[in-house]
Every structure is written in C-alpha cells, then in structure tokens.
Length: 443
Image (cartoon, rainbow, N blue to C red; front, side, top):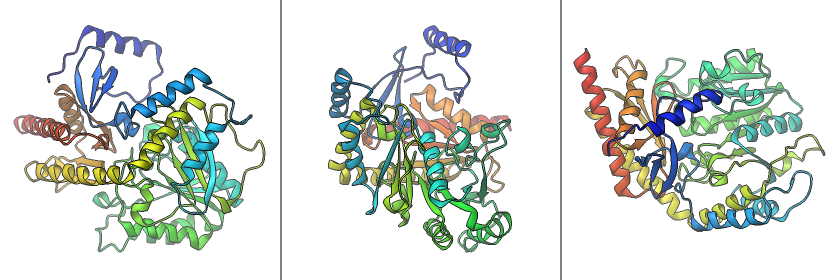
C-alpha cells in the first residue's frame, strides 16, 4: 500500500498545531480513525500494519476482545464515575482482588490512578513514607514520566528535563546498556562494572544508602532505547536493595502485562520487586494506572495520597474483562510473545548481516529494539537514518515508534498474525535498504 497524504489529513494536523500544546508528536502524519484486526486505518482510508500497539497499550490488538468492549459499554450505560477514592464501589474492589492474584505471594495493596506517570508518583510517595528516607535512585536512559516527581527519575533525553529544575532528591546510576557501556567496558568481561560503580561511587560518595528510599528500575528500558540488561544485573540490584534496606520498584508500565512473555517483566530475571507500577495495557485503551505493593510495607494514612478518577468504573470494567481474558489465555499469549519475538529477532539479525545501518538488535518477547548506526565500528548513532526508515515504512503501510537516540521499537500486538507480521517485516526491510541505498549515493 502506498500512503496518500490528503487535504483531510493535512487539515487536521494544521488545526492540531494551532490549538494544542506541543507534546511528543514527530513527523509521522498518522491521523488514526479506527483499528481492525492487525491494522490501523487513518481518516483517509490509508491502512497500516500495527507495529506500535499505540505505545504498547493494545497488547492484544486494537480491537482487544468483544468481552472487553461489551463490559465497558455495560458500565457506561450504568455509571461511569463513582468517586471511588471517597466512596465505595464493588467493581474496583473485585478488579483489585483479581489483579493481586497475578503478583507474588505477599502482595496485597493496590492504588488506582490514570497513567504510568501517576503510578510512579504514587510509588515515590509510598517509598518515602514507608522507608522514612528521602532519596530515590534511578538509572541513566530511564523514563518514569514527565510530572515533577517522576521527572526527577526520568533521565532519557535532555528536552524532557530542560528548564524544569530543580528536581526532587534523586541520584542516577549507569544502567547495563551493554551495547554502549557508559563506563566504556565490554560485557561479560566487565564483571558488571556498572554495579560496582553503584556500590563504590554512588552509594559511598554521592549519597548514603541509609538515605535512599527506593531504587526505580525498568526491567527493560522503554523510551530510553529498549535496552535489555543481563539477568545478573537485575539480581545484583535486588541484592543492593536488600543489603541496604532499600525498596525496589519495578516500573512495568511499558514492559509489563505480557509484553515480554510474562505478566511481570521482572520475572524474566528471577527477581521480585517490593512495589510494581503498571499502566498502558492495563486499561485496554482507557486511562488506567496501578501501583501494587508488598503488604508488609504497610498502608498509607487517610488522606496522605488520593486522586479523583482512580478506580474509574468504565476503566475498571475494561481492565477487569481484559485481565480475565489474559488469565484464561496465559499460556497462549506467553507462547506467542516468545515465538513471534524469536521470528522478528531472527529476521532483523539477517537484515543486519547485509546492512551496516543496523548496529544492534535486542529484546524480550515482543518488546524488540533495533539500533541504527552510521557504521558498526564507530557506533555513531544514525538519527536521521532512523527517522528516514520510520517515514519510509509509514509511507508503505507500517506504523512504528522511535526510542532512545537512534532506535526503533517493534511492539506489535501479541495476537498479530504471522502473515501480517511478515508483511510488516518486509516493509521494514525494504525501507532500511532504500535508506541505505540513498546514503550510498550521497556519500
């Protein structure tokens, strides 16, 4: 399919620019209207294979399931909002009870919010309250949200923090980004120098571990580049937390909810956190964030933390119906994430063998990153080329999103058909070759 940029599309984009505050929209002129199966359609009828799941919100397809849509419709016809944080309602309680069964033994406190940022804000406050400590520790390339508390931990791109300081009490450590080690080491001969740096520099010279309330960790860094650490990295971070009485928070906003083949992405590393945050896929397309804590941490005093829309009945109806779908299809979803992820990774590595633009391919399940470089020796980020690949793919019927400095994230629905998965990969391969060919002519 060749994309047609109509006046109808141009008109919406022009109007958007006049009345809406600038957010994160890039150059891709997608004006989405509907989803059907594995495809997204815009307002002019252009059709695209979906390799974005609208930022990993539709982990099980744009249409999700009939049960989810029906549950939302029934709730909308009854009562959409119940002021759940001030009054009581049955549906949010039932959903919380259902959700807790997906977490390790000993978890039993749930807080509802409306987004991943809010889920992380709650985790920051809970960690400070429970620990009676003030500092947070995050990682370079991390993304935990853009509100001021979460932004103190987010350190992915300069524009996200520029002119917004001063920030909350937070320190940052090198993440195990082994393709571009921030300490200039090589894995595995480095013996996890990044962990050693945390112990010998950050927690001995920058801040006392007795003042650190929590370590916030994305099991797979999302917006920062789809960076997958070695398993022992997560285990060492857990050990640091245990040795120093620090709460470990697993930010599962993008990586969780079966995206990596497991409900909790941290389970891929054999590690259990003390607090988990989730959003995106939880609400089946409606705004929903959850913060889930270990019961032994305690509870919050009345009025210490709340919101207006947490536990919104329409969002809860969709979330609960989707969770029931996930629980009844767990084995199949895990298998699809694994097998389809392996298919994509194998194909991408074959592309890398014939194209120097691809520097690294990495991922877990159906959370896969492709990093573009000028050449593999220098590893210089190929930002313009990455952007050109995204645009070329879009023009030929494939929607994807960027991440990191020069990477593309591949996050199709777990339920995407093999036929459409291969169709999308064909479009991507053609786009990479077209951009590489243009570069060769220009050089």
